[in-house]
Image (cartoon, rainbow over all chains, first blue to last red; front, side, top):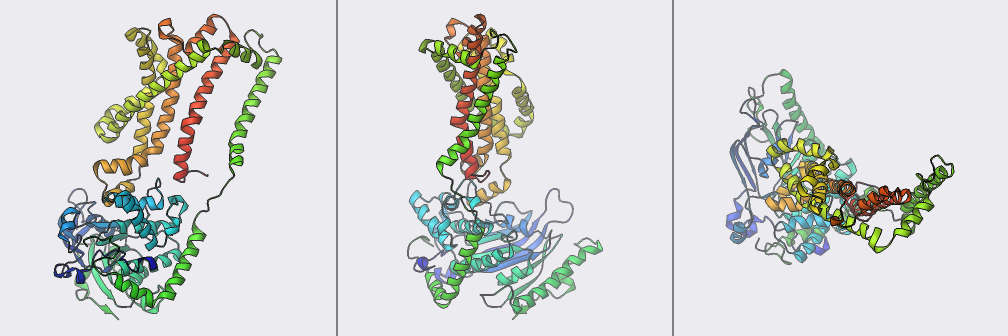
Length: 305
Length: 311
């Protein structure tokens, strides 16, 4: 990334540099977040979630089906409303002018499908995000080119979506998400549909973009190793109702590899915990009656070294 | 974050980056090569076909088809299945057309019919689009008028001709009424189905990107619905054209001026079979021509840019 060496790729959140106000401000704060669908009967999808993601932190959200992790992202992105509880998302930090003009608390969202618009080119997709943020024609052309360079797709700017591979599409989607300049990037299993080789490469890409931009990432996955490979913190959720069961701080230094022994060890530990969470559902008891938090010592967060 | 896109940002984030690239330069380069290799392997290659081969590929089959039809037609005439008076050959039809082909006769009729067809179709697009948007947007309207609209599409619009003539007399208004009633349902239904087929994910993405209200319609909803809409327009044109022919054939009056339908009616009165056949061919050719000149390229482009068809 020589071209961007002298210019910040995306100085979205740099709390330690932007002043005193930003330092204490988390990127995301969820307080007693509960979500039920339909009538207020049955178990809620999410039940009393308290979670804080620090500015610039990379958090992986892990859980079996039905733990409400995708719902949580939709809520944080503002696509759905919580039943109870509050959601705070950091807006552009440190600058009162932009904080008042731009929508505060905006989080960029990426899906398992790239969901690029097929009537636009790769560059056009990124430009649309910029246009909707009020960029003029020439500014957004230049900016889109720069963002595509960040994900190493400057050669594919004029390609149509169907001419791109699955991995390239997700990188364009990443560039489009970066174009939103949010302090928070929400990713809903963005690599789940990719082949293993591509996924491995995109792990490197994502970590590199994260390190350069300082954006906070909340990354939802089913894949334990992926979570350990990427996250600074792995949050395990229980299913039905969705609650935070346990979390781990991952202190393996980046760059990590998915095949590293450290990664495998921690993944094994988390997997057995995940299996215990899933097995609770085989008894047929409603999940509300035995919270795993009470049965094991998840209150203190085990730290992996 | 005063101006995040300034060439040298205020936050100094460039610092850690350069540090990183210094420490991991070799690794970075290898990674870039790995990724470029993957891209090259995965991406669909765009095959280039020379223009003359493309033209040949698309023009040859129709030419073969036309020649085949002419041959069979000639053979049927030569075998005298029907008397020559009622079953003219291609040569007779050609002679009839070329002898009548003066600006005052067929030429003027063609001009007037195409003009009426296109004008009626244009008005149908406007009205049909408004109706389609309303029905797609409001559940009540859809439930109330959706079935009626589908019914109207099935109703042969020639059935409206008697009513139109009684209401408006033999005037252009009567003809336009029939054309509009023929074309509007197709346009509206095409738009509704186009809008219905927009993946909900696009709307969620659009909202996350900040497209709300009119922006969502303009940048996400309409482009996404375009293929269905164009299919509706194409069918709308077909209905407009055939409704026009039906109306012109029945509503004949000097006050209306010339039209292809009137030529047909004239041929019937004169029992001029070569001219009647010739008129059929003209109606066909205009229908095919508008389709090939306007809708086929439009549709091809739409589908190709979205990767919904091979080259």
